[in-house]
Image (tube, rainbow, N blue to C red):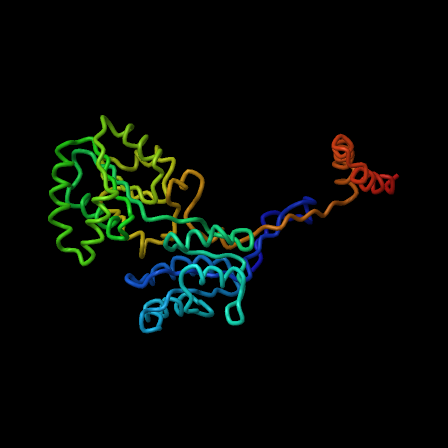
Length: 329
């Protein structure tokens, strides 16, 4: 597949945009299995036209790979799956082994060791980003449904003991109701111990004067997920500067973004939403600049290039251009 941003044959300059040849997916999970992560990485890669997609993932205690992951990999067009977890899985994808091919880019989240390994191999391969624990911030006004607010906070907290779930509200009364609902709802979760540990260690509540102040705090935090449980939420979206994804209104459940809405759930964390974006088709494409000048374009651009080259002290650069200009006389 070839994507052309500009017709360089017409303009003299442009870009050729092509998909990456081989991408390595890292899909974590032993205690919790994530077939959704397989789909969220593989599908945009396939849409981009990546030629080969391989997956590294930790094996279960019996040495097998979860059937859920294998089915997702088959559906999404993954070529090969390797039982290689943690640091060694990242290293194998970055450098290659006798059985695991070296890839051009590694995509996917993982624990702190996987994250550190990705940092170490950057430059040898490309990365989608450096991901930390999941983050959910809920902005809620006094008219919000406390039960739905609590449900979204718990959905964020049950990811991981290190996950962050924070409520920012303009209403003390709403906060009191949410805290009560958190206690009742957490008891029914299969991962309630994880959710409790997350809420106790990294959960938080902030009561603010108005929604503008709430957005100021949220933009400063730059969360992975931002949920707007407010009246006329569409008006608040315009004020969101930093977030991986915004869930607009009470019906837009944060957790549905992990599965079926469409955009990838591989999103920036740790404040990196200030400068980074969710994983998408563009992450599997690379551009090559193309220069194809004719005599007319050379005459127009050459003299200025000569002057700049000499100003920088590169006489060879200047002469290489001048020789072409002289041929036209």
